[in-house]
Image (cartoon, rainbow over all chains, first blue to last red; front, side, top):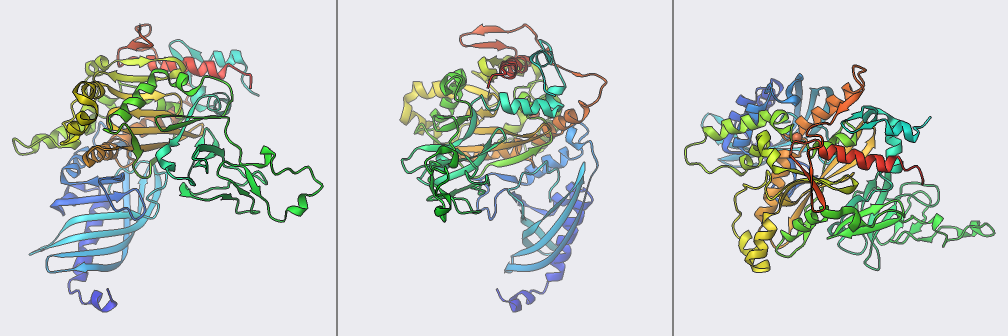
Length: 163
Length: 434
Ligand SMILES: [Fe+2]
C-alpha cells in the first residue's frame, strides 16, 4: 500500500469520524449504543498475545460476538456485581489512521489509540485498533474491532470495559 | 521479631483464623520459608519443553527458576541465578537454547545447570575456584517429579514424594489426561496472567467456596438469562450460556456437589456431578474416545466430574474442562494467578475451543466472573486491617463431615476445605526445623 492509495480513499474523514464517535460511546459508558454499531456477525477482539493469529485455539482477554456483548450490556453497572460498585470512566485519544484494505463493500482501517481508564486507580492502555467496516448506504457497521495492546501479555488487573 | 510456635498456633482456631495470616508480611515470609519451600509446587508441563534445549521461566514460591529439557532428555528445574555474581540468567518466559549464558560476565552453563566455562579463567588460578563445585552452578532444586507430564518441584530434600503428596488429587490429573483419546494433554499457547491485589490464600480458599457464586456472580447469571430468554424461540442454548449459567446455581445444587478434603490441605468439589455436567456433546469426541477406550471405560472416564481440585498451595485443576490455574505469591497482598489451557491430544479441535471459551468467560481479567472475585479479594485485603475484629470466620457446617475412603466428605457449601487447609498450614508453619 502506497501513500497515494491511502489518500485515494474519498471517505477517510467520514470513517475517522465514525471511529471517533465509537470511542466516544465508550467514554460515555454507553455500551448499548456502542453495541449497535456492530454488524449482526460483528466481533470484538482483545488478544492476549502479541500478533495473535487465532481467537479460537488461543486464549484472548476478550473475544465477543453480539450475544456476549448483549450480556455485557446487561451486566455493565449491575447493582449486584461487586466489581461494578465503583466509578468507571475512560478517555480515548485516537490517531494515525491508515487504510489497510479497501473495496466497494469493506474497508479495513488501522489506528493508534491511548485509553486512560479510571477504575479504582488510573490505568493507561495503548496500542492499535484494527477496524473491519462494512459499507452501508447510510454509513458503516463494524464487522470486527481488534484491539492490540502493546502490553497484551502483561500481568493485567481487571478490565471492566471494552477498550 | 518473629512468631513463636505458640503465637502461630493461636492464629488458627477450629472455627476461625486470625487476620494476620492474610496481612502480616512476617507471616508471609514464614510461609515462603516453611510452607512453599516444603510443599510440592507446580512448575509447568512437559509439553512446554518438548525438545532438548527448550526452557520456560517461572517461580517456586519466591524463587525464580528455569525448567529445561537437558541433553539427556531429562527435565531439570534450576534456580535462575548465576553462580558468579547472582544475576538472573534467563529472562525470556520461554525459548530454546544450547547453553545458558549469563549476559553479565559470560559464564555459561549446560542445560542441567553445570558450569561449563568462564571467560579469562586464568584469573581463578591459585584460588579455590572449582568449575565442578555445584556452588558455581545454576543449582538444581532439591527434588523434581512429574505426574502425567505435570512437573512439580520441592525445594526441600525432605517430606513425602510427589505421589504420596498428591494422594487422591492425582486422580483428577489422571482423569484430565484420560479425557484425551491418546491419554495425553499438551499446553495450548501462552498462559493468561491475572494480577490480584490479595494474599495468595484468598484465591486458593475461594476455589472451593460454594457460598459465593450465587451472590458474587449473580449479575452475570441474571444478564445471561435475560439475553438467552430474548433469543427467538427454539434457538439452541449458546455454549457461552451453558458455561456461565451454573455459576448462578442454588445453595442446594452446590451442597449436593459435595466437598472432599484430604491430607496436606488438598480438596476438590464434585465427583459424580459438578457445574460441568450438563455441557452438550461435541461431535466426534465420543467416537474418538470409544475407539480408544471402549464404551465402558469411556463412560467411567467421563462420569468423573470434579469441579476445582486444589493441590495446596499452588495448583488447581478442572479436569472436565482442561484448565489449570496456578497461584504465584509475590507479596503478602499481591498474587499472580496464571491460567493454563490444555489440549486433549486426539480430540476434535472444538474441545479446545470450549476450554478457551470457558477461560475467557470465567478466568480472564476481561471476563464477567473473574473481576467479581478479584474485587471481593481486594475488599477483604483492604478491610482486614480494620480493628473492628481481628478474626475471619470459617465455621460453616463445622463438624459435619464424614470419612469416605481416603477423603472426608462435607456438604459443598461447607468451610471444611478452608479448615483443612489451615490444618495443613499449621503442620508446615509450626515445624521450625529447617
Ligand atoms: Fe467466584
